[in-house]
Amino acid sequence: MSAFLINHGEKLACAVILAACLVFIAGQSGDRRYPTADRFEEAKSRIRAVLEQEGEAPKDYPAPRVDYAGNLARSVGPLPEPVSEALPAFLSYPRPSAPEISGGPPSVDTIPMELPAPADLVVQPVEGFLRISWGKPGEAKHCEAVRIELFRSLAPEQVGEKVCEIQLNNADTPAAAHTAPDQPGAGAHEARGATKRSLRLGPSAARTSGPPRVFEDVNVAPRTTYYYRARVVAQATKPEPGEITFVDGKLVRLVLPKDVAELPRETPGGRLFASAWSPVASATTAPHYRVRFTGTADPVAHDQARAGGASEAFFTVRVWRKEARGWTEANIKVRPGAPLSGALPIKDANGEEVPFDTGWILAEVRPGVMVEQTTRDVPVTREETDPDTGAQVPVLVAGPNGRYRMRKETIVTQVPVMVALLKDAATGRVERCPQRPAGEWGPSRDLKIVLEGDEPAP
Image (cartoon, rainbow, N blue to C red; front, top):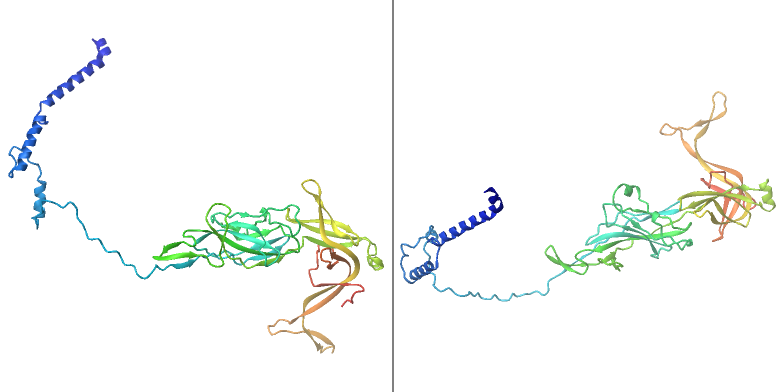
């Protein structure tokens, strides 16, 4: 028996379930609670009789459990007017008349775009480069400022070339500057912009986020005057210039001021506009060379100079190297009529010497006098008679505050010195370069060089 259930148990269970379903269906077919075709016809005839004859429904007709209609009638009450049996198919309303518009077209106000130019543009000469700084631009309205452009020229009336571009589109991080690349082999006035390393963050900009306001232009020629101007470039926002929109319930049109111009865009995007130019700022670069005359090769320099000039002169030249941003010294020996040029005691990346030329020519070496004038404070005195000796003695004079009175005294000293006359190869200008000891690159006080035979010393 167990083997039979194991092999045929599932089939036996399916047969029992099928038999139960057949019994249930047969029982339901004889239940009067479920309508049949005859009972449908009987119900239809009774409903038709109730609709044709006014009166109460048959007593054996099942009444609703809840009288919704009666409850609604009792809560509302009798209708004020009987409702007609036939309802209209549609309702019509009178068409309203067309509105009358008077007064002409609506008025449109104009609002200008505001794009202030950079303020407080300052150029300062520093050793080997120019430092350009500017203030924070004013707030732009109806547009979004995206960058500041800095231009450089050799004349105040020229716009010149763009040397720096500082992005303003990200106020959370320091902005990046895009500068023009170097031009290898370019002359002093043929430079085409500053290098990428030209950008230096100022003290305030380096500590805080935001765009820098300091730019260092290292690609400049020595002893040259440069003129700078800047402008702000903004991108249009909605509404754009020329569009009409609602502002505070009024129709307004955005217009461009006379000092704002639209720029052509090289890449796809919104319209670009440039502010007015900032005031022009200028500065003259310092020399890239410093020359110190250290002496001559003649044993008796003064006598040799009087006899016809020294044979050779020694100079120490400091050369500013913008790649290293520092000075490099070189000692040279020059004959009269030769240029002050040579090679630095270093090698470049290719292992070759680094030449230099100061642009000066040694005209001659002559003896002279270096007149140095200084001032110092000395006390004020007056002569009084000593009661014991009867001699005149100086006595200090006291001031109103109880302190001794002081006066300025000028002291003039004359020092014999050898003077090298240097001639500028470009302009022909002659400069007197006195012999200076090591560590001194020029007079720090009021000096006057007087050559023997030219003018008397004071």
